View (cartoon, rainbow, N blue to C red):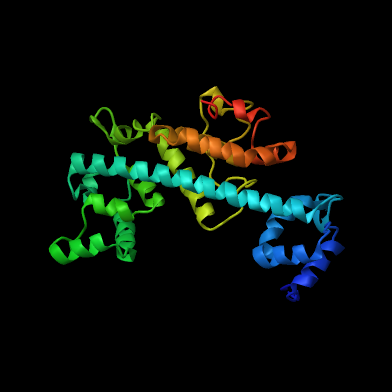
Length: 307
């Protein structure tokens, strides 16, 4: 039997009173209304969720003693800043990757070689890839595509250097995943690209999958700071990427290490990390938040982060 949903919308004043009734400490009622009108009650609820009381393993609607709305807002605004800074790093990495894939594919297989199934791994679903490419090209309004289609009407597809400009990170990751890497066949296409990041070709495929997921969270303004990653990295043999040096591969600190490593060849890693340190320090003074984000205690001296 369906449970009846009978919750009614509340005014901002009613929302503030509702939070107070549940144990949230709010000193300035007017400020609280402004905050709720700016960010939204339901959106902020994800950030006060960790403060809710558990009884016999069941979460309740009431807040722990000492729960301040100001702290919840601080976490929310921190998460926004964190997300934007992570997004900026992914943008740089995506551009670098796009350039390396384009250059390699164009010189190895020609302007239209990406459309030839034989240039990819035999198990790669090339038809699905091309179908996705066609959709992304069709959605694009870029003038360079319109110019090509008007002037080269006999060609069913655009050249690789145009195609990669309109492909999403997910599609670029899919393309890379489909490349052949067989030393016996003297065809190490993945390696030809991964060497620019100075990481193993299998690790690059894994990390691109993770960054695509994180980018999508950022693009949809999702909560990121204490999220348990739905896609986590494969085990790494390097002890610097293992517990206890790196506590877990399920939290955002692991992603930050990936970003730091992949930014290095672009030359943006030092400046980006310095800015990220400034964002992180106020929050990471709290051990509880460090653990929630997968940070070790002495995170600033982490061998990967401090490199």
